[in-house]
Image (cartoon, rainbow, N blue to C red; front, side, top):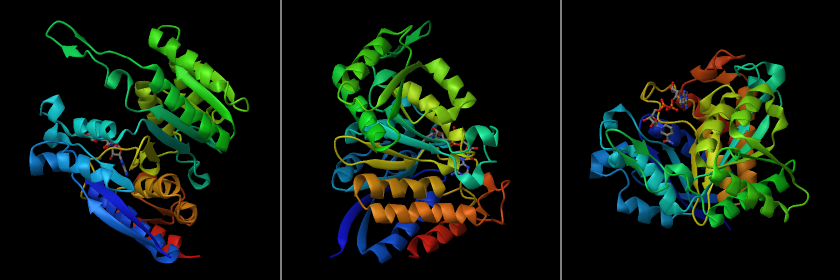
Length: 357
Ligand code: NAD
């Protein structure tokens, strides 16, 4: 009997619609061979929502995502909306959506594809075989802490974590470490920040329940350095919101292009699956964006939200085969390319390979 899923689709701004269309193309290709039915429910967020409704996160979207099995998202933002008041900007809509969905755990793999080992700005021998999972806390910390104020002569934000927030993200990280190489590095700034010492103490508490996982702690400044010096030392990295934001972007460069890496935001209910990059207004509408990060996000959605492991494997293998055969979008075009593809062509090739047995 075929499986039916309702997928929330938020295309967003800039290259968002172009890359999400390719991910849907690939999802449809695997659905046809795996006896899955997807019903897509499109919703507005960010600049597109501002233009249509006046707000970056319409109530309809908040309610709509709750009726889906998972949500696939492109990216939001662009210069057109940058002069709006902060709470009316596209980025506020995304932060609000993550909060409303209770997606407190952001999983960001940084994997170096064998074929693109030369695409990294680091030496091939440094990045070869790198396979890191950054587990970032997403709905707490300084991005959400109150009070926050800006005056003419001073401004401040508040970095705050509750016990419950640290416990639940630490558990997610330990569970993932158990399924991988059982090495977890928790990143903080406990030498300076009380909130970081609190974080570290709670991570130690959670570790007692996972004796097989080797836990280490690292200050965030050292972690930034180590990621570049010897990234192969990391398996799972656990971080708070702001540190994870920065470190996962740094980790993403190990792979050569920000256009390659997916992410999953999971938590209490429906999960949100999105590429790690933004809306890339500089290349929007040109048909040259790399859709792989979004297609790989769709694979994470199949794996983590829907339990469709075989379909996820199909997509991930198809991405590897496409790269192995030398198909490249412009951002990775300088590395062993046989053919430079448009966004649409790249999606088509991956869809084709994903549907083959
Ligand atoms: P960005 O990630 O959009 O772009 C950074 C650089 O990477 C650009 O040169 C861009 O062309 C390139 N790039 C990004 N994705 C690519 C892809 N798939 N293929 C090829 N090249 C790609 O970051 P930015 O320029 O700092 O931000 C642009 C807008 O996106 C801003 O409005 C920002 O607020 C927003 N943003 C949104 C999200 C999100 O929706 N999750 C995340 C980050 C930034």
